[in-house]
Image (cartoon, rainbow, N blue to C red; front, side):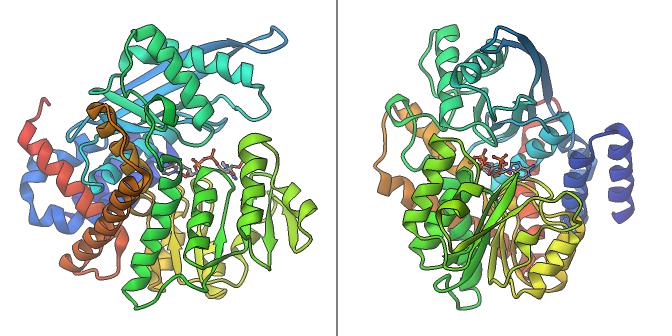
Length: 454
Ligand code: NDP
């Protein structure tokens, strides 16, 4: 079986040149499925691995838009509809200059397993554009979102494909996208999640990913009879996931000492309290400023600019107990992982998708730390998106306590299933294998049930 999987990976590499991140995601998942493939020869017979690594459909389009000066621009838009075995395609939209087909295929592939873990009926997809919202006016973002939806709307539907936000796509962008969809389709349906409360959004959706990441860390710690109280935590980024990770860590009496953006990071040895977090939320969500301003305002903090000449990120080189990478893929390399261990970190709960390189993951596993991979630890966001879809179908809104209780239960369940599956397959403590196998089996069994042409 190992030979079959290695040969398949080589085949996928050859078939997808210049899609390094997609290949990386496949190389992370497929080898961990060996025990389940050994046990279930029917999966190989039905070519499940070959089918699950190939998108059902890829939509690629151009987005012309006009800036405030009247100059014209063209960006590229995508939607990768990866797998619809267990439900409509579901996954975020990313607006960032690094977006390309390989990035979105990696994200869509991860999403398939993640969505299966939530237990909700959602297939996997991902989309976005190489448009950079940074430095653009609201009017420019509005025109771009209109242009994006003028093409994408025809591929979406509440029972077909339901996008959400991701990097560069927050409440503002979802509003513009939803407004254009509603107008073109002449329908008011739950076709996007992450919507505003007045127009079909779910309470606690903005908080869900960050809160879920912290719940996952708390569950991992509980297996060792510990809690987050008093733990020192490193958090990267300062966007949606980082903000609500920090908020929940404060609720659970942990101490957060770092935040960052792509220009640099702050280290605040006194800890980021609620007042400071409120400042960050206003800085990032309203003024759309840079994290450096935090150190200008709070003298307990030191700001360090990002330095692309370094082969490590100094943010991960501080004494701490826990790390919550919340920015982007491959933000922790092997050296960073070694630095984390050297500095006492023994809990890593991933808010970002695939933030650790494969050799970095090996360091975590060798050191037997509590490591929650993104597809399990950050599934709270898509879980509450699934709950938003349910509320839209019911034409009803649940109170905040109800959504939060459901989120908490879902995260506890994802942890339990990943933990138990790892034990069942003889790899106790290995949440990577546990999450991959548990998510895979649900999708694979459904693909068998629905037949080759589904
Ligand atoms: P936001 O756009 O709200 O924030 C992104 C943050 O990450 C910003 O601080 C940004 O800094 C930083 N960042 C992005 N790209 C880079 C980069 N190449 N180098 C350094 N810093 C970078 O996005 P989210 O918080 O929504 O998403 C963060 C991560 O969480 C992503 O990996 C996303 O896929 C993942 N995720 C998000 C979910 C959600 O519900 N939003 C759900 C599950 C996972 P700057 O402003 O300088 O670019």
